[in-house]
Length: 281
Image (cartoon, rainbow, N blue to C red; front, side, top):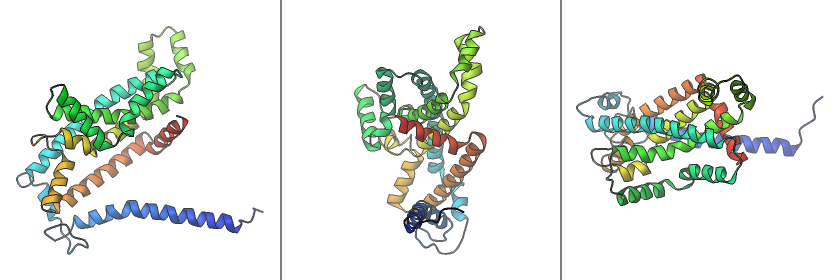
């Protein structure tokens, strides 16, 4: 027979369950509210919505009437794709160099790579603007890509480091003992085995770039308008229901990408490995 649970055990379970339910409600309720407002018949954002219509989604995909939103989406995707590509390249190289090192220099370098996540976003955005202006660069799409790349590198570094930490060193040693060069070993042994960690980091980096407001705010111009900044401006000026429609599309896209990543590389497991790696540091 199992041990009878005490009153303290039952109370603890109820409290934890209530807190978990409250956390889920806090996270999910805003999403439901936004999705509901995206189908409203009102001419401005208002909750609760009145009626039900798809006209705001139809208007959102109308090239003529939503040209500025489409341009902002194009800029956002271009920045996210290039920032993710460069972030994956630098983050993977950093992880390969730092994963198995226990020297003081490696710890300093690791802290340096992770510093963009420690600093407040608004502080980092302002610092990036001041630095680029000081060395003679003007805000542009290229500078936004550079700023987002710096922010995305830590995500790739952590997930890739977690994958490398679980890689058996004997595999690399066996490859080299059989006459394979370090480059061949890297290409045919190491990278294929840590590819799921790199892919998980790339997904997190891509989503972080899309959702990054501070860097885009300080480094964008009228020609390099980014979607979060465009949505912010629309909320301040008109409360256009297309904002809710854009949010609905982003929520659906993020959900589909999460399902894809969970199915291909096991994003949940990689996130747990990432959390364990952070705790070990």
